[in-house]
Amino acid sequence: VTGVQTCASDRNAYVWSLKDGVWKPTLVLVRINRAATCVKWSPLENKFALGSGARLISVCYFEKENDWWLSKHIKKPMCSTVLSLDWHPNNILLAAGSADLHCRVFSAYIKDIEEKPGPTPWGSKMPFGEVMLELKDCGGWVHGVSFSPSGDQLAWVAHNSSISVVDAAQGKEVTQLTTDHLPLLSVLFVSPTEIVAAGHNCCPYQFTYKGPGALEFVKKLDIPKQTSKGSMSAMQHFRNLDKKATEEDSNELNTLHQNSIMQLCIVSGEKGKVEKFSSVSLDGAMGIWTFKH
Image (cartoon, rainbow, N blue to C red; front, side, top):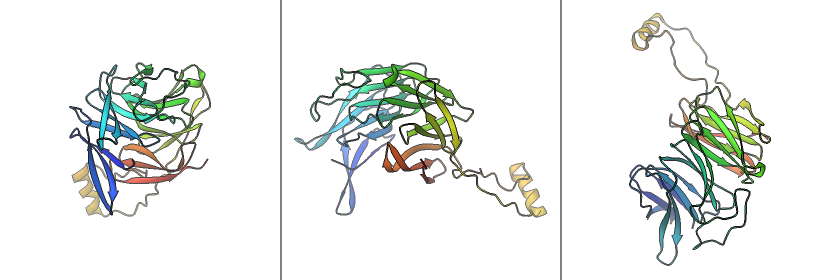
Protein backbone atom coordinates (compact mmCIF):
# COMPACT_ATOMS: atom_id res chain seq x y z
CA VAL A 1 0.00 0.00 0.00
CA THR A 2 1.51 3.34 -0.99
CA GLY A 3 0.32 6.90 -0.76
CA VAL A 4 0.99 10.22 0.95
CA GLN A 5 0.75 10.34 4.72
CA THR A 6 0.03 13.45 6.78
CA CYS A 7 -0.20 14.25 10.48
CA ALA A 8 -1.21 17.38 12.36
CA SER A 9 -1.84 19.08 15.69
CA ASP A 10 -5.43 17.79 15.59
CA ARG A 11 -3.99 14.40 16.78
CA ASN A 12 -4.95 12.69 13.52
CA ALA A 13 -3.04 11.00 10.71
CA TYR A 14 -4.26 10.23 7.20
CA VAL A 15 -2.98 8.15 4.31
CA TRP A 16 -3.96 9.73 0.99
CA SER A 17 -4.43 7.55 -2.12
CA LEU A 18 -4.81 8.78 -5.69
CA LYS A 19 -8.00 7.40 -7.26
CA ASP A 20 -9.31 8.67 -10.60
CA GLY A 21 -7.23 11.83 -10.32
CA VAL A 22 -8.54 12.66 -6.82
CA TRP A 23 -6.63 12.29 -3.53
CA LYS A 24 -8.79 10.38 -1.05
CA PRO A 25 -7.89 10.24 2.66
CA THR A 26 -8.06 7.20 4.95
CA LEU A 27 -8.04 7.86 8.69
CA VAL A 28 -5.40 5.97 10.70
CA LEU A 29 -6.14 4.77 14.26
CA VAL A 30 -3.07 6.32 15.90
CA ARG A 31 -4.58 6.51 19.44
CA ILE A 32 -2.76 9.62 20.70
CA ASN A 33 -4.00 12.43 22.95
CA ARG A 34 -1.46 15.08 21.98
CA ALA A 35 -0.39 16.70 18.72
CA ALA A 36 1.35 14.58 16.08
CA THR A 37 4.75 16.15 15.39
CA CYS A 38 6.50 14.03 12.72
CA VAL A 39 5.77 11.13 10.39
CA LYS A 40 7.92 8.87 8.19
CA TRP A 41 7.25 6.02 5.73
CA SER A 42 9.38 2.91 6.14
CA PRO A 43 11.69 2.06 3.18
CA LEU A 44 9.34 -0.70 1.93
CA GLU A 45 6.30 1.57 2.46
CA ASN A 46 4.37 -1.19 4.26
CA LYS A 47 4.24 0.80 7.54
CA PHE A 48 5.03 4.25 8.89
CA ALA A 49 6.06 5.79 12.19
CA LEU A 50 4.41 8.80 13.79
CA GLY A 51 5.91 10.81 16.64
CA SER A 52 3.80 12.92 18.98
CA GLY A 53 3.61 15.10 22.06
CA ALA A 54 2.09 12.13 23.89
CA ARG A 55 5.66 10.84 24.57
CA LEU A 56 5.20 7.86 22.29
CA ILE A 57 5.72 6.61 18.73
CA SER A 58 2.84 5.02 16.81
CA VAL A 59 4.02 2.43 14.30
CA CYS A 60 1.13 2.11 11.82
CA TYR A 61 0.52 -0.73 9.38
CA PHE A 62 -2.27 -1.81 7.03
CA GLU A 63 -4.40 -4.78 8.03
CA LYS A 64 -5.84 -6.30 4.85
CA GLU A 65 -8.47 -8.45 6.60
CA ASN A 66 -10.33 -5.47 8.03
CA ASP A 67 -9.14 -2.97 5.38
CA TRP A 68 -7.86 -0.36 7.83
CA TRP A 69 -4.68 1.11 9.30
CA LEU A 70 -3.75 -0.04 12.82
CA SER A 71 -1.00 1.18 15.15
CA LYS A 72 1.24 -0.21 17.86
CA HIS A 73 2.81 2.07 20.45
CA ILE A 74 6.43 2.42 21.54
CA LYS A 75 6.13 4.22 24.90
CA LYS A 76 9.13 3.56 27.13
CA PRO A 77 11.54 5.14 27.94
CA MET A 78 10.58 8.47 26.28
CA CYS A 79 9.88 11.35 28.67
CA SER A 80 8.93 14.14 26.26
CA THR A 81 7.77 15.06 22.75
CA VAL A 82 9.17 13.06 19.82
CA LEU A 83 10.65 15.61 17.37
CA SER A 84 12.25 13.51 14.60
CA LEU A 85 12.23 10.01 13.09
CA ASP A 86 14.20 8.02 10.53
CA TRP A 87 14.09 4.39 9.36
CA HIS A 88 17.04 2.01 9.04
CA PRO A 89 17.41 0.54 5.51
CA ASN A 90 16.39 -2.91 6.87
CA ASN A 91 12.80 -1.61 7.42
CA ILE A 92 12.92 -2.75 11.07
CA LEU A 93 14.98 -0.30 13.15
CA LEU A 94 13.70 3.19 13.87
CA ALA A 95 15.71 6.19 15.14
CA ALA A 96 13.96 8.86 17.22
CA GLY A 97 15.10 12.21 18.57
CA SER A 98 13.08 13.84 21.32
CA ALA A 99 12.75 16.88 23.58
CA ASP A 100 14.05 14.89 26.58
CA LEU A 101 17.57 15.42 25.13
CA HIS A 102 17.86 11.75 24.12
CA CYS A 103 18.49 10.02 20.81
CA ARG A 104 17.30 6.40 20.61
CA VAL A 105 17.12 3.47 18.22
CA PHE A 106 14.11 1.14 18.60
CA SER A 107 12.99 -2.07 16.97
CA ALA A 108 9.72 -1.55 15.07
CA TYR A 109 9.37 -5.18 13.98
CA ILE A 110 5.73 -6.16 13.38
CA LYS A 111 5.47 -9.95 13.06
CA ASP A 112 2.00 -9.75 11.43
CA ILE A 113 3.38 -8.22 8.21
CA GLU A 114 7.10 -9.05 7.98
CA GLU A 115 9.62 -11.83 8.42
CA LYS A 116 11.92 -12.12 11.42
CA PRO A 117 14.92 -9.77 10.91
CA GLY A 118 18.54 -10.89 10.88
CA PRO A 119 21.23 -9.49 13.22
CA THR A 120 22.64 -5.96 12.69
CA PRO A 121 25.56 -4.04 14.26
CA TRP A 122 22.92 -2.38 16.49
CA GLY A 123 21.94 -5.75 18.01
CA SER A 124 20.40 -9.11 17.19
CA LYS A 125 17.31 -9.42 19.44
CA MET A 126 14.59 -7.22 17.99
CA PRO A 127 11.15 -7.70 19.56
CA PHE A 128 8.79 -4.75 18.99
CA GLY A 129 9.73 -1.73 21.12
CA GLU A 130 13.19 -3.04 22.08
CA VAL A 131 15.65 -0.19 22.80
CA MET A 132 18.73 -0.95 20.67
CA LEU A 133 20.53 2.28 21.63
CA GLU A 134 19.93 5.14 24.05
CA LEU A 135 22.19 8.20 24.00
CA LYS A 136 21.65 10.50 26.96
CA ASP A 137 22.12 14.25 27.14
CA CYS A 138 22.63 14.98 23.45
CA GLY A 139 23.12 18.68 24.19
CA GLY A 140 19.55 19.85 23.73
CA TRP A 141 16.37 18.94 21.90
CA VAL A 142 17.21 16.45 19.15
CA HIS A 143 15.71 18.15 16.08
CA GLY A 144 16.74 15.74 13.32
CA VAL A 145 18.04 12.17 12.86
CA SER A 146 19.30 10.33 9.76
CA PHE A 147 20.66 6.83 9.16
CA SER A 148 23.56 6.39 6.74
CA PRO A 149 22.95 4.43 3.48
CA SER A 150 24.37 1.26 5.08
CA GLY A 151 22.43 1.83 8.30
CA ASP A 152 25.62 1.38 10.37
CA GLN A 153 25.86 5.09 11.30
CA LEU A 154 23.27 7.48 12.71
CA ALA A 155 23.62 11.27 12.56
CA TRP A 156 21.61 13.75 14.61
CA VAL A 157 21.44 17.51 15.19
CA ALA A 158 20.61 19.09 18.56
CA HIS A 159 19.63 22.51 19.89
CA ASN A 160 23.16 23.29 21.14
CA SER A 161 24.23 23.82 17.48
CA SER A 162 25.96 20.43 17.37
CA ILE A 163 25.95 17.61 14.82
CA SER A 164 26.86 14.11 15.99
CA VAL A 165 27.35 10.63 14.52
CA VAL A 166 27.21 7.30 16.35
CA ASP A 167 28.93 4.42 14.54
CA ALA A 168 27.49 0.95 15.27
CA ALA A 169 30.21 -0.67 13.18
CA GLN A 170 32.84 0.87 15.50
CA GLY A 171 31.43 -0.18 18.88
CA LYS A 172 28.73 2.53 18.89
CA GLU A 173 31.33 5.26 19.34
CA VAL A 174 29.95 8.81 19.27
CA THR A 175 31.65 11.69 17.43
CA GLN A 176 30.31 15.20 18.09
CA LEU A 177 31.08 18.48 16.32
CA THR A 178 29.86 21.75 17.86
CA THR A 179 29.40 24.36 15.14
CA ASP A 180 29.41 28.15 15.36
CA HIS A 181 26.09 28.29 13.50
CA LEU A 182 22.61 28.77 14.93
CA PRO A 183 20.93 25.43 15.85
CA LEU A 184 20.42 22.96 12.99
CA LEU A 185 16.92 21.49 12.58
CA SER A 186 17.28 18.80 9.90
CA VAL A 187 20.02 16.38 8.84
CA LEU A 188 20.38 14.10 5.82
CA PHE A 189 22.99 11.57 4.65
CA VAL A 190 23.56 12.18 0.91
CA SER A 191 26.33 9.57 0.48
CA PRO A 192 28.13 7.06 2.74
CA THR A 193 30.43 9.84 4.03
CA GLU A 194 28.71 13.16 3.22
CA ILE A 195 26.01 14.78 5.38
CA VAL A 196 23.88 17.87 4.72
CA ALA A 197 22.27 19.79 7.62
CA ALA A 198 20.25 23.01 7.81
CA GLY A 199 18.31 25.06 10.35
CA HIS A 200 18.02 28.56 11.81
CA ASN A 201 20.89 29.91 9.68
CA CYS A 202 18.58 29.59 6.63
CA CYS A 203 21.04 27.70 4.41
CA PRO A 204 22.31 24.10 4.07
CA TYR A 205 25.78 23.10 5.24
CA GLN A 206 27.87 20.11 4.14
CA PHE A 207 29.75 17.91 6.63
CA THR A 208 31.88 14.83 6.08
CA TYR A 209 32.26 11.76 8.33
CA LYS A 210 35.27 9.49 7.71
CA GLY A 211 35.13 7.46 10.94
CA PRO A 212 35.17 7.90 14.75
CA GLY A 213 36.67 11.29 15.63
CA ALA A 214 36.63 12.42 11.98
CA LEU A 215 33.50 14.58 11.60
CA GLU A 216 34.30 17.86 9.84
CA PHE A 217 32.57 20.91 8.40
CA VAL A 218 33.11 21.15 4.61
CA LYS A 219 31.28 24.18 3.24
CA LYS A 220 28.15 26.28 3.03
CA LEU A 221 26.04 25.12 0.07
CA ASP A 222 24.11 28.36 -0.49
CA ILE A 223 25.37 30.92 -3.03
CA PRO A 224 24.94 34.46 -1.62
CA LYS A 225 22.54 36.65 -3.56
CA GLN A 226 24.02 39.80 -5.05
CA THR A 227 22.04 42.80 -3.85
CA SER A 228 22.12 45.84 -6.10
CA LYS A 229 22.12 48.99 -4.02
CA GLY A 230 20.59 51.79 -6.00
CA SER A 231 20.45 55.44 -5.03
CA MET A 232 17.89 56.12 -2.32
CA SER A 233 15.79 59.26 -2.36
CA ALA A 234 15.80 61.54 0.67
CA MET A 235 12.10 60.74 1.20
CA GLN A 236 12.84 56.98 1.27
CA HIS A 237 15.80 57.58 3.60
CA PHE A 238 13.65 59.34 6.22
CA ARG A 239 10.74 56.92 5.71
CA ASN A 240 13.04 54.02 6.60
CA LEU A 241 14.34 55.86 9.65
CA ASP A 242 10.76 56.50 10.77
CA LYS A 243 9.35 52.98 10.14
CA LYS A 244 12.33 50.70 10.75
CA ALA A 245 14.74 52.85 12.80
CA THR A 246 17.37 52.12 10.16
CA GLU A 247 18.70 53.74 7.01
CA GLU A 248 18.79 50.40 5.15
CA ASP A 249 16.18 49.95 2.44
CA SER A 250 15.98 46.18 2.83
CA ASN A 251 16.51 43.64 5.59
CA GLU A 252 16.70 40.67 3.21
CA LEU A 253 19.16 37.90 3.99
CA ASN A 254 21.72 37.08 1.29
CA THR A 255 20.56 33.44 1.26
CA LEU A 256 17.95 31.67 -0.87
CA HIS A 257 15.68 31.14 2.15
CA GLN A 258 14.66 34.11 4.27
CA ASN A 259 13.75 32.09 7.38
CA SER A 260 14.64 28.86 9.21
CA ILE A 261 14.88 25.66 7.13
CA MET A 262 12.66 23.07 8.81
CA GLN A 263 13.19 19.95 6.70
CA LEU A 264 15.51 18.40 4.13
CA CYS A 265 14.27 15.57 1.85
CA ILE A 266 15.72 13.46 -0.96
CA VAL A 267 14.26 14.40 -4.38
CA SER A 268 16.25 12.16 -6.75
CA GLY A 269 18.90 9.48 -6.40
CA GLU A 270 19.35 6.83 -3.72
CA LYS A 271 20.50 7.62 -0.18
CA GLY A 272 23.91 6.21 -1.15
CA LYS A 273 24.27 8.87 -3.87
CA VAL A 274 21.71 11.66 -3.64
CA GLU A 275 21.54 13.77 -6.80
CA LYS A 276 18.99 16.36 -5.64
CA PHE A 277 17.49 17.26 -2.26
CA SER A 278 14.82 19.75 -1.22
CA SER A 279 14.60 22.25 1.62
CA VAL A 280 11.41 23.78 3.03
CA SER A 281 11.45 26.91 5.13
CA LEU A 282 9.26 29.08 7.36
CA ASP A 283 9.42 31.72 4.61
CA GLY A 284 6.95 29.55 2.65
CA ALA A 285 9.47 28.61 -0.03
CA MET A 286 10.88 25.27 -1.16
CA GLY A 287 14.32 24.99 -2.73
CA ILE A 288 15.72 22.09 -4.77
CA TRP A 289 19.48 21.67 -4.59
CA THR A 290 21.80 19.64 -6.83
CA PHE A 291 24.47 17.86 -4.80
CA LYS A 292 27.81 17.44 -6.58
CA HIS A 293 29.72 14.36 -5.42
